[in-house]
Image (tube, rainbow, N blue to C red; front, side, top):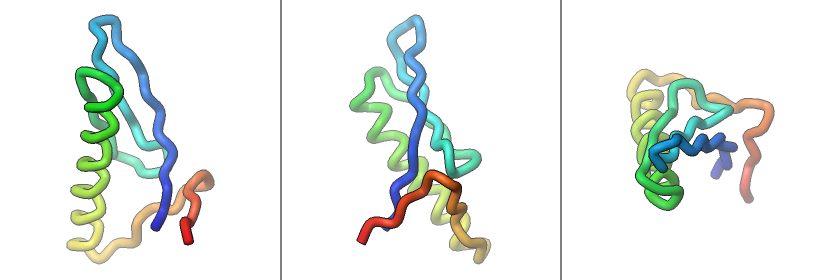
Length: 68
């Protein structure tokens, strides 16, 4: 299993916008940090499905860590 690092930006209206730093195109948001974490996991799952469907390898950025 891989662990990707994320950046979370709190907006003035309280929403949290999250981007995965090592996986281009994976972004999401939530009304609070808990919701944003749930949504970014779902966004990553969907993006990985697209990569698998296209038979492309998932990005392994410099900050991606393998969990054993």
